[in-house]
Length: 496
Image (cartoon, rainbow, N blue to C red; front, side, top):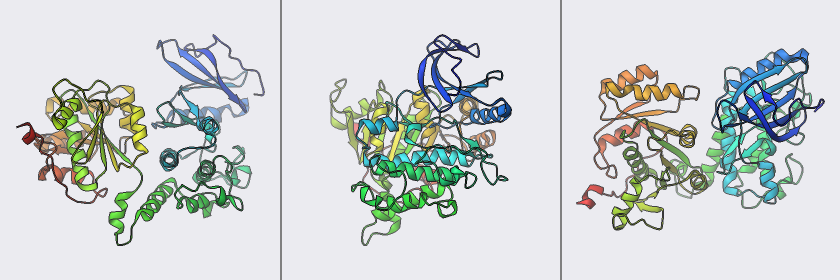
């Protein structure tokens, strides 16, 4: 830093955050761990930066922009303080435990498992798409391994918004040229204004870095020879296009890259004589359906089972995960399926029913490992638990399903949940109301201003195919799956 820090052990920022220790430093900033004096036991990261007093208004505007962001793979920025006489500004944000992707690569000699590379790319693209499609687009400008945090649960978080900026279409060039050599786009060195395509260039540099074991982040002659042989070859033209010198020659949006990754993966999966519509079902990525009950007895587990077997009858390769270490429902089911005496737990937490792999009493770390496997869908049974871990899994799922009562005296349970999480994007949410009337569905759609509200019919055996339930789920998953049928498992019949 150009000036010594104003903070030391015991310093208090904003009359609330007590500094504990230094987490890191670089460039014009330092990051500290701080304890919350109002919330005992809660820790935050406090970033101290030095700003020129002349541009303090710009810094304040940027801080307000960062505080408005809300995405599961971004740290929340919850507070901002400024001290004009010294030029010091402070951002208070989530403290994320873990190591950077850069440190992880060093620890594993530049090796990250090949099955994690495309999921990582899709996760980063999801964040970039969120930033780039805001009303005032946010350009990150410093995507690199040191700014991606890997948590103990193998989750990825994008950190350090020190040089992020809002895109201003009337400008021809950036006022300040910042970025990391090797990962920054050419226009960040003064040839033009950065925009969404600049972040996509950095993504290409990041992917090349991962695919060459940390040896290269820029496309040079012969670099293809250093790309690991076991990696999907369709990645090479995608990386090459991301790294084009001129922005107009690159992909133009994060969504375009996502579609190309999926299309290319589907193409590679196609076999001779196999139609592309069927080949698309073999896409290597895994989609996550998270089922959350708004209250006890709302039917989350029953719905999760019904959804899993519906998906298995059509797509194969489905895992149903009980994301609760003390839940009992799957243990009882395993006793019935495997003929285990009541109360005697099986040594294996995984069992199978008609092609669905059930995972009982599962942790988040197990879910991360399953994401790197061959499952087409993972369905998370979150029960009615709304602790931080299960809420995070719900919010980051591809298909979040809220299960609640459609009864008039219980509808506030659902609207209350939606309001309590209103700072999170809810456009992907689906609301499922067992045994609800069409009037209850209409009323809730109006109250939530959301059209993805579905009444679930009576379905006493969730393992069995039911035409009415299939019609609802066909609508819920429209455009995602094709229709094939498989043998059914009769749970009620087996009990009898």
